[in-house]
Picture 1 (cartoon, rainbow, N blue to C red):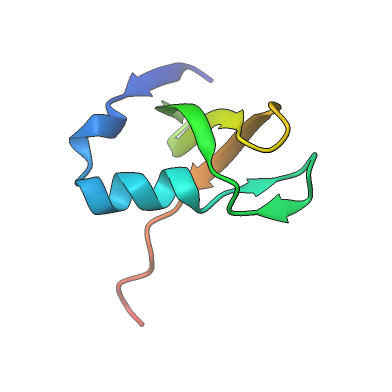
Picture 2: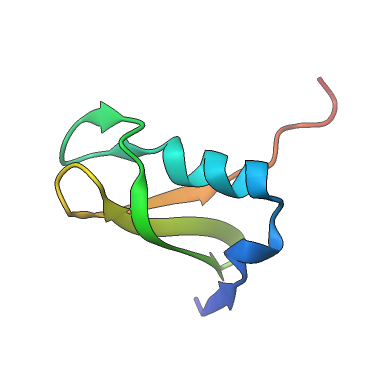
Length: 71
């Protein structure tokens, strides 16, 4: 597994804002608190966003999954 940085700013503004604001924190057990210092990276073929929870200050990491275009 090799962590490869990606450019979160290459995404359009709406998608970037959505990814930053629509979060889940395992520590807070609260949704949509948002993250600070967001970064995007790829690891083992999966894309992730991570950052600092605005609620508690712990690290949040979420996989970014593209919706299935069949449905």
